[in-house]
Length: 202
Image (cartoon, helix red, strand yellow):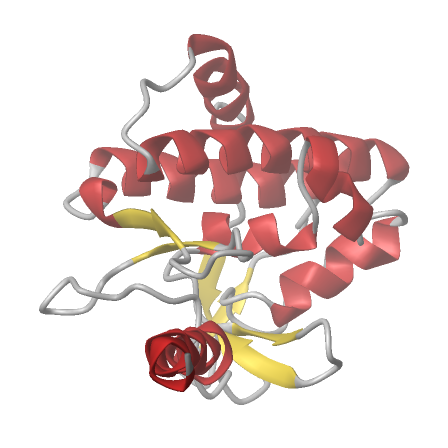
């Protein structure tokens, strides 16, 4: 069993090519960083089975998962992700959740999930038979836990004017506004500072 990942979250790259750390707070929301419906399809990264396996490896799932993934799993992953993207955005903006999107999540969750086990050395590992279907079931079940749990009202969209990353605010005060302070938080503070100074120059 490999050593555990240091902290949850993903390393993303800004439009300027600068890497930054983004923790959406839930496994299901990590999947949303792989693309999305409509205009967000230009960010698509799930093209091959290896792409889905690579996402699972980067996610907050414990290390050591040996996935068997095929092209059908990739198509199903994209469909589930798009449904979750729209549901999370609706939740973040106080809109009603659409039944067809809920049906897509519930259908994925109805399949058997990934199974963990205790290894001989006392660490946590994965049972054999990890498939794309089981991965998506695990993601969908995580979404159900999020949307029906205590943080359901804390699903938010980044407050930056041109960022649409979705996250759940699990902080104690519940005042998180940005996808990442080092990325959008600092940029928006600089923008606000420039806007305040502009009238002075006039």
